[in-house]
Length: 85
Image (cartoon, rainbow, N blue to C red; front, side):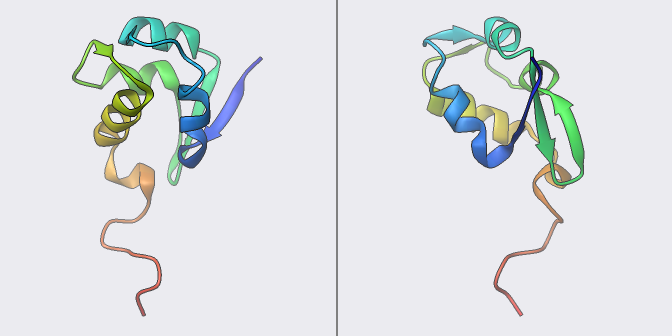
């Protein structure tokens, strides 16, 4: 069953994985997940494929590497911050 996740909900799913886990295994296990971005969506396996490491030691590692590899537009408009007038 396909599951759509916003970026702020990814950690809940990452915490369910057993670590260490390879990039390939993470993509396989979460192959049913589609990440929802500010500017669209992408299957999790395609997103995790861009990460520099081929193995993650923890959910923290996976989350950090995935978020660092996302295009800026995926998380919102460049130069915008909440609360600034």
